[in-house]
Image (cartoon, rainbow, N blue to C red; front, side, top):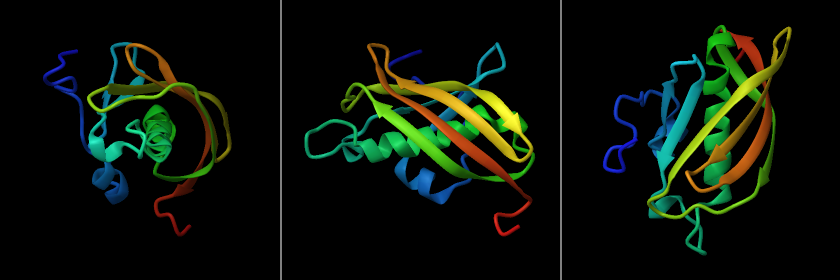
Length: 139
């Protein structure tokens, strides 16, 4: 991963205006078939203390939920629940990554566990539940 362009070859197609406005957030599929996400911390992603805002990490975790479960979504889905544990800060210029796994699937529900990290430390652990809702969010 190059510091100049750490996300070369990664996709940048969330399709979500809120994520696009707060990103850019990238994703890729590793050789083992698992998805990984990433973004470079910019000053606009930070709080008054100069570290990445917890809200940005929550947005990133929500993005990662859907990337991690991408192959199992079967259309439109929504976040039902998300829990997070913040463990370390990130700073402007840091490359922040996320990965995880679907740990259970039951009917329309997908249960996901993931982590957000830099090269130096784990920033946040998260779990979430995604509900499949069909072709549109109004079903």
